[in-house]
Amino acid sequence: LRAVESAYAGKSAGTGRVWPMVFHEFDPGHADLDIKSGDLESAGVYGLKVVSWYDSNAEKALPALFGTSLLFDLATGEPKALLNAGPITALRTGAAAAVGAKYLARKDAKTLTIVGCGELCPYLAAAALAAIPSLKTVYLTNPHRPEKAAKRLAAVTAATDALLKACGHAHTAAINAAADAASAVGESDIVFTATCAKAPVVKSAWVKPGTHVSCIGADLPGKQEVESAVLARAAVYGDDTAQCFAVGECELPHKEGVLPALAGELGEVILGEKAGRTSDAEITVFDSTGIALQDIASAAVILNACEKQGLGTVCDI
Image 1 (cartoon, rainbow, N blue to C red):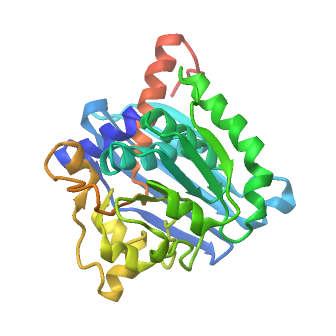
Image 2 (tube, rainbow, N blue to C red):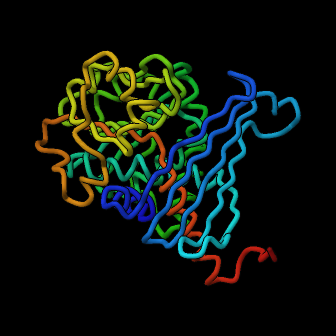
């Protein structure tokens, strides 16, 4: 959480820079990779993350996704670390949604709905409960297979508890499965969306005044989890403006003309340069497309801890 918050702040302060993203398809729709990179002065490093996706890997008993992070010394270019980016990505993505809610949700927010019950779900729940102590209830809901929420409840709850315990927190909110997404969203002060949807799964009519929505799933062109009308009603903040309009939740509303501009980037809110939420009735949205600085800041924290504890394998180069 602290690493992701520092990454957003660094980007807006100009002490962290996001470099152009590389995306390549080996087999369109079946195999691709992307490379996200940048530098972060506060951590004294630059780095990159390479993520590859091969949908045929299941036939070979391999994960569909592989992620690798590399860190380098910003002053000398010396390689510092090679890390498995998979766990880091899950942790920093959960943290991103929670940091967005920390700065843009109402201070008395008590109810969170997570739309999407996949592998990210426990990370989203744990990060929210760690960052927002006022939460009392968390609903899990699945837009396309409503029964999945109940089936996943025990596993998500156990994984959430384990994540919180590992960082010295205990979960004090009730975690429940909700079969009806409309009712759960309508009751909620905060909504996280984490799906692969290419058509909206959260309707504008469900979202009450004062709600905050952190959108996580839209990371490629054409994806959309929330109806454009929600963004048209809201104060919308992003992690990187250009990326939000190219591949994020804002892409289609922007093309449709209902979202001509963002209210700002989250880093500007963290630094106090933008107001963020301006009233208890305002709807706020955070479009988290995922930026390299989140991975770099998180990897730097892990590297620092490993160096202090003598962990990892040191290689001659």
